[in-house]
Length: 430
Image (cartoon, rainbow, N blue to C red; front, side):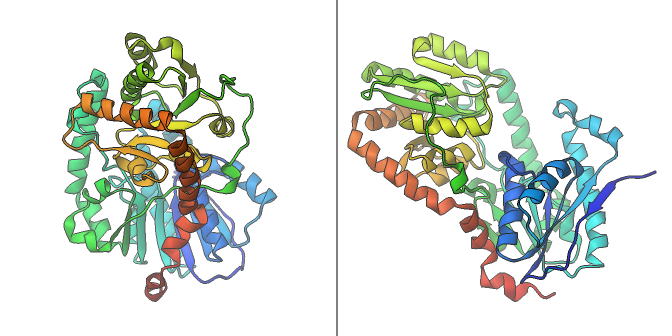
């Protein structure tokens, strides 16, 4: 029985390091994990390293089309997938974890065969970036980089009380999964064999056994480039009155994005500042619940709800607004936050996960959550919004600061910060 499908592209280009990158999700012109896999591969090739990427076969059409238009001579792709009959497991997301685990095992066998032909300096697991899902590539006997990985972020218990019952149940299961991962023998062996473990946040670092912290580093995995910048278009037709402050939220309409807190904070803001509007771009399973919160808070008529639109259209929306509100409760990264600051939007967020790492006082306001009740957090979110709405000069300074802050998260800077480290070159011969 044929267990997998492989396609290999290789040429004779030589560069300073030979890197094998494991990127289950990897596709050009995409956000989230697929975009992470693609950008790390491309940026490594731009650093003149020779890069082989193991990814899923269903990414091949998009990758081939992009490489035909924009070739990278030192970038090679190895396409591997499970049999077609196994793909049905992923429908509805029910069997995705089993599928991914078996894909990782198959990718290991493919990689093992490749190491007999190519003397790699580094093997690097990049996607999926979750610490609970260790890569079998750690056992190839080649110096191994794991991450950046996240998944250790968790909503404070005081802020879970208003979750829908389903959300409370999911978060409990997630807590249990994180505890089990801490004692997972395969994960611990992978940590032991890794030369470098990259954690997206301090919360994820705390989920790694302390004995391996000496090889850990906090490192965001997401970045931006100038192509993400867009000039405004008349997409959502906001009020043209310059006295109005326009607030934007972009994200899935699910409990963990914290929009229920943001809506209640906006209601408090609206009682203090009349000329302010909120636009919500997104869709999700908790949409009706969030609409009810807006109605009960008396702000239904002041909130514009826009169903999910393509990323390239979302990018064009940012310049239409003055403030970005993103009170997510456990995002490991925060792509929309980077997009917002690139367009000069001051951000109001919580001190949790990636957003709390990206944002500082120069580009917005970060609301502390430790030891606070939900009511206190909502009030603090409202106070931050009120301050930015009422102080136009502060808003301008934060807008300038946001654009400056965005420069720290360029893709080239993110990847170079790891692979330009002299210690990597010292360890490359094994």
